[in-house]
Length: 131
Image: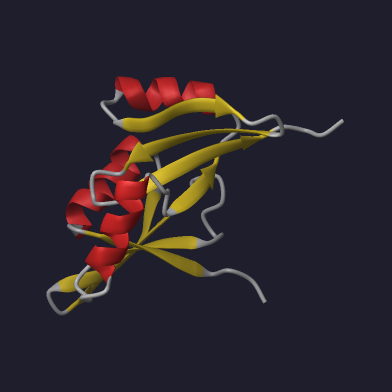
């Protein structure tokens, strides 16, 4: 068993696609029309055949209360691995990304949290080798 697709609910699929590709650096993998929306996934250019992130419309009635509660409590919806949190923080900040938590050193991991502009907080994390 392996993770194939995981999803993030977004308020606007095209806006999310632009943010996740043009700002974060993911690549569009699938963009298949499905009614008024699309089966729209992005992947890491470092692993184009790896797990896909589905940019899913947030139309189900349970989605908005859930996302609002996470945002209000400052809880990230998901976490992306990076090799250098500080470098990504600087790159993304210069691209206009709003961080709700700058890099924080937690010992074995460094994290930062940003707003994806589509209703979610996303964490980036750098794991440090354990001695």
